[in-house]
Amino acid sequence: MRPLSQPQRDPTLYIWILRLILLLVFIVLLARITELQVIEGSYYRALAEENRIRKVSISAPRGKILARGGEMLVGNNEIDKRIIFDPNTGYTKSDNLSGAKPEELVKEWIRNYPLGKKFAHVSGYLGRANVDEVGRVDSKCSDKGIKSNDSLVGRGGLEEYYDCVLRGIDGEELIEVDSKGEKVRILGKRDPTSGNDIKTTIDYPLQEFIAEKLEGQKGTIIVSDSKDEILALYSSPTYDPNTFINPPSVDVIEKILNDQDLPLFNRAISGVYHPGSTFKPVVALAGLEEGVIDKDYIYEDTGRLVINTPYGTFSYSNWYFTQYGGVEGRINLERALARSTDTFFYNLGGLLGVDKIDLWANKFGMSQMTLIDLPGEISGLVPSPEWKEKVKGERWFLGNTYHMSIGQGDIAVTPLELNRAITAIANKGSLCVPHLLSAEVSGNFHFPVSIFQCKDLGTKEENIKLVKQGMEDACSPGGTGFPFFDFKEKNPRHVSVACKTGTAETGVNNKTHAWFTAFAPMDKPEIIATVLVEEGGEGSAVAGPIARDIFDYWFAADSK
Image 1 (cartoon, rainbow, N blue to C red):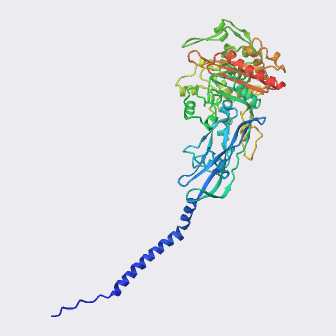
Image 2 (image 1 turned 180 degrees about the vertical axis):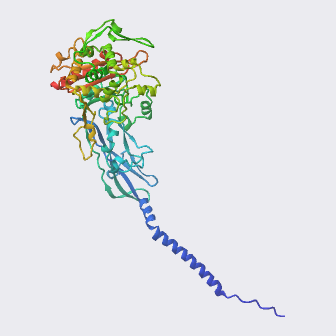
Image 3 (image 1 turned 120 degrees about the horizontal axis):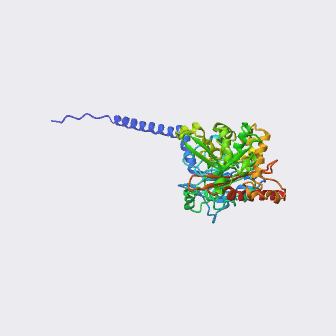
């Protein structure tokens, strides 16, 4: 038998299946090509461009900080750096210029602080932008752009307060590189824009001079004019801001940051201290303005003031009685200021009452920030019965008023607050905002006008004159400011000085803060100076000679 024949399959079926598969593959490839070239073409083209284009930042120089006479307080040093391209990391800026070609060099700017330690708390310093600042725009100067990892930001002092003014706008250079990362050509360049300069009220020679007066001591010196333009300001201990620009080692930075004497701490605006007897001129003026005493008021000092209360008998002594067993006898207001008679001011404080003392201390700005154009300022404390009840859970007693009347107890002020209050007395009752920025400014930046404002306290001229006379007597023979007894005779212009000494108890191991505040000439003051030596001892013996040196220097220099 012949086997049955198998049915023959049509070969054209396989051909059509193969064609269909090829068609599907072609459609998929076409769709992918379309996606890559049409839909995502610009994206991949940008990636390709970035693989061969490097963006090299060109740092902008910060604005200079100038003294009132135009001297350079803070500036910039221009240096060259070599741009080294790398196919993996992009580029780096190297200080090693060996074998560098001219086209590989770029200009950089290094901040320079010529006065170094002598101006640190006013100048501040620069530091790299931290993680919270990188990639952000400062809302106060959005035109300066986003801060990068390499951005330098002002830290402390004028560098921080006027960072937006001083900071420039970085430039950029577009460089084409080959596959090995080698430079091919420059595609484009945007030059950097320099920051604005600022001119300050600082007297350059005076700043240098006062910086030498607190060597090895903790404290501060503030010198201003009658409109509260800061002529010089120094806080000790201090630091060198150049260290933060080119740190010799991490150890040096850590030593500054961990120093228990707090060299970064600006004692002029951030330290609070009992003012001691330097507060008495404010209490004296309060008594005159409130009418509880007048120019004819007489008090008889017996060495101490004794009060009997349901809680017992309390005695409040005068320093002259405590130290020497002496009494002042019958004295008026001028003599009480000249001799710093505690019992007179205990009595005056009792006549005024704590509310009136608070009122006038607040009028003179002793419980509020002065608004100086420096960061880090804090306000002092003028205590009240309500404050004591809330904070300490205690009642206010007459003894608290007595202590407050001589600048002791809970009252605490910053040295700048005290200097401003004395300036208001010196200029016949005008309380001004202390400032470092000169009214002469460069660039187009709009500065806050508030820093140039003064407020009339509404005091009577005859009362101011009486207090100033008492302060002049303090710096005359028989007063407490003995370093100035011969000043009028010996200075070239024969000007008289008004002053107030202060020895403020700290409550720690019988240590006292040494204060001295003064102004001259009496009729039209040119300078007001406040000296504080922290835990230095007696004001007239420790802070007084420093103040005398400052006034000798100023009026001798003025006469030349």
